[in-house]
Image (cartoon, rainbow over all chains, first blue to last red):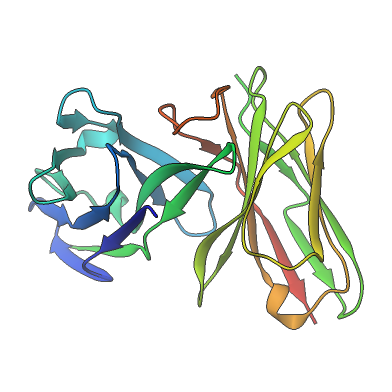
Length: 115
Length: 117
């Protein structure tokens, strides 16, 4: 079964400093991985996706993630945090089961950005 | 291009009642999925529909059901509501047509917040 583990439930950074949100995955085959962001009382927005092309994936709002097979990791980074980045971030793996498709979400990382 | 539209945004229901939630996917998207989000259990997969057929179902009781219409709009129904059904219900659509692993990602709606009292 596919799964993802987000290693930090809360991360706090100062505005202008780098952001690192950690995610490890478990998959029996080459996975499709995603990062989604959820702002308070909003739905989920796709930040970026990895689908076995380039291992360094660039997303929206300056975020990027690197797929490392040897470490089974897909960490999300941003060089400089902005106040508007404060939100909950989910690492997600896609799997195909029973003829259909589903997403399995990590438990989320709450990012706090301080002045 | 309009996004995924979910109605209503908020609902308050009494235990034992039933509820129907609606989702209109992005035009051209035929795959629609539903997820339940709660503080305790996080985001959990309910079911996926494609071309009016349920292709996949999560581990939820039979009180949770859904359907998809020929225009790809989808509804989910919860019967005999329990307090634990209080959650944010999210609908997502995808341009994915095949049954393999999704390479396209899903676009989510803003959700319906259901409160059961």
